[in-house]
Length: 269
Length: 86
Image (cartoon, rainbow over all chains, first blue to last red; front, side, top):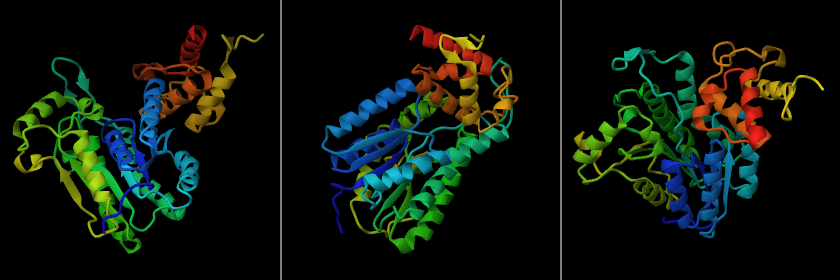
């Protein structure tokens, strides 16, 4: 059954940039209040606060928190706040769109004529998988424990083509995305009895600040612009619209999937 | 006045802040201990330190400056300079 989002709440991890930012706006336009988590230095924080204000002007509540999504302390601090803001109901939509990790290869590489670039360290690999993968699980654990994941809730996690394919300089993030997809499957099964749907969204190549940090991304962007059957790259708004559309139902039957939102890009790569 | 004061940035207060963020005893945060090599600080923890420094001292740190936060002594110099010009 179609259920409007007006008056419900969304919890967005990674709200200050890219997919998280665009989805916050689309959900707010649909009348959904926003609890946003981001982790930025002063300049980014000011921009995020300004963005929260513009969401508020759409007639919804928007509360942003500058916290490390991977820290236990952040969950301890925010979970009770989520309970208060949502009057004990919990968010109807949860989006994990966290881009913070080490971009490098597994083995040392020669960077042109320059010195050797060392391969990934255990610390970098652990940190990346923890932030971009495991943190979803820890938040859902704490939210479920606080009874803040209601029946009909929709959980989305942003994955990428790198979850199953190899992109140069992306190896630790690839591992994180593969981990995230595994967590989505297991959470989907474990949350099915509660009527909660969990899906991964695999966006096509989208020009976001996170993508632009990947070494050689300009080549990937040019290639995907060329081959995308839709004739253009994916936009953050495409992802935002998909998430809004998938959230407007009380059905939990669409669950445990990796959903491509890419204009068919992955089919022709 | 102790030699620990530069433009109102107390070295011991700074040491305590870093120890708390790194979840280490203050004794381990010696003036010259290298955050990355001696104290195993990764980029995410360095970011947490930077965010806390911004908050406490009401300063701005650029993303590119995070790698220059190498030791307590260096951080003290950087923060002090920023507080002075703020």
